[in-house]
Image 1: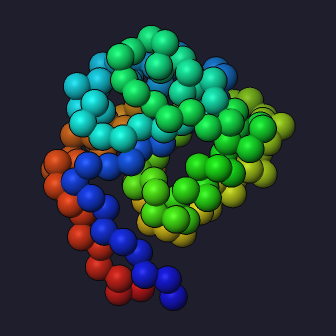
Image 2: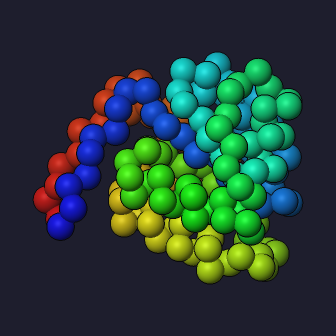
Length: 141
């Protein structure tokens, strides 16, 4: 069994949104920019560029999801380079890269990173006391 690293105080956060959810993610990022500014941000193509253009936050941009961005994020999760993911996916629209989306979610669960898939969960996680501290993992599985 692989050993999972602790999640540091300053987190590497992936920001992802399907097309119909990008405006919701952008509003959420703007509302929480003061907290997000103290962490390292990355995201898939269009979403990352949109956040960069609309806020003063630095965001590392990967490829768009359908062009491999989801897989790049997943790879970084397996290498402990992403600690936390906010992924506002669209449950009402089928995605042409749905297998990649499912693989990304599977990797996120397998590597035990916090995942927010809607505004309420993102708010709960971002306001958690764990956001300001290192999270010590206990590997008892």
